[in-house]
Image 1 (cartoon, rainbow, N blue to C red):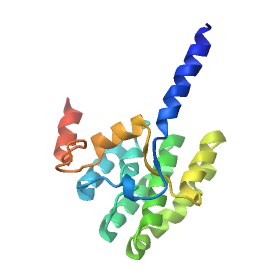
Image 2: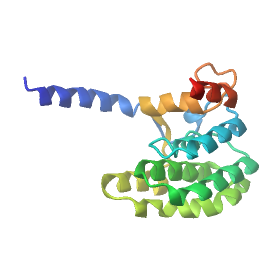
Image 3: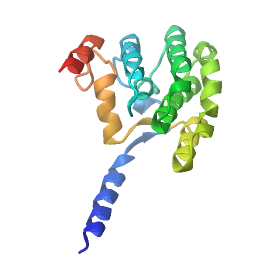
Image 4: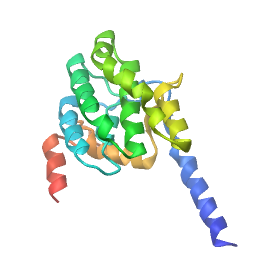
Amino acid sequence: MPKSFLILIAFSFFLSSCFTSTYYTRKPALVKNTDINETIKIAKDELQKKGISQGLGIWVMRDQIVTPLQARSISELYMANIDSMKIPFNIWHSSWAISNLYRLGTDSVKTELESAYQKAKKQPERLQGGVKNIANYHINGEKITSGFIHFGGRAYGRGHLVAPGNKRYIQSYQKYCDKKKK
């Protein structure tokens, strides 16, 4: 059997498990005991990076419940950083986060996110190819896509979304800082 065929089969099995945590309602994507204020601190640190994870600090919060004040902080982070993001993955994921937070938010949350949401809706125009299409689907699609979707997203979420008392997630901003030092 050719090696490329085996790789194709393995990749197919990998993809078949990717989308088992995709939801179109918020409830199954909510993480119990989230501390959004602590997670915002992590997002600020992640935004200072220039690699593939730069936009994911905001992304991990996209399905959680935020207050208007937290929405304002997230909006400010997004607006201060989106134009300098160069990697399509980061543009897509941070804009997807703003879209979900806005569309799932209360009227007060939407007010705080309005400028960021208007900007996020236009971000797929910066992208090319298949990434542009999937980003547009997540950001501007009729359905709101929630959940960590695949193993990599779930693993990143567990190390960057603060949920005290929930053993699957990081417990505090300090624990995140301690892990970074190692």
